[in-house]
Image (cartoon, rainbow, N blue to C red; front, side):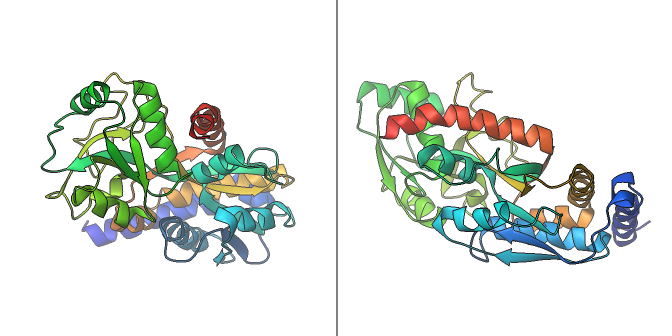
Length: 318
């Protein structure tokens, strides 16, 4: 069997499993499902959401339509979902990490855990500590020793104050007992350019930013529990024996809190099967995003732990 036939057979098999699931037999959507993405079109979360929506639409009798509803760092769209009719016709695909950090950093009218049901994690944007390729720091330990020898002398870049890359970086500094000057930029590309250009000593940016820049950047460690499939040689901080809080950006699917149990089960089964399709995995990998599925229960537990870890880090920023 050639690759094209194998992929088609795999996708058909997965879709058949979705259609035959007991939960979908109990609940079948009658109208299009709106997948709210609380950010502008074209970003990382939006790209992943569209890949999932396409795979879900292949299996359901109705399409899954991505609706971008940006504003207030994702809160405008999230609020609209929290207030939507809880019948399965509206879901949200968002950066769970950013949503949780927002709940820690400011008073919100909605809560990630009280006002939503967690359906699943479908991806995870991971922070990496990167240095210029010609940096004198060959290892994380080299950087730590330099920071200890001259407190406050190091400069580091991130994607904006309060972003999960910023909080992840501050978590690293706090855990190592270091002080350094943080320099905020807008977006991953500008943060990466600052590292490459030597404006800073290191940066905390998404590991996917390494694609196409392996001759200019050297990643030293990942803020993650596991290695990245596209950069398998980069160790995690935990593998290096360093107890750094795992602050990341799980791309998660949510539904309004009062969504009936049978609808929740059907959505969970549909998302799980769609995330396992070859088409979804290929769309993810085309954007250098590693597929990373977790059940709703595991995603909720991960986000709650992240919220707890973030509280002390955020308090240190004030």
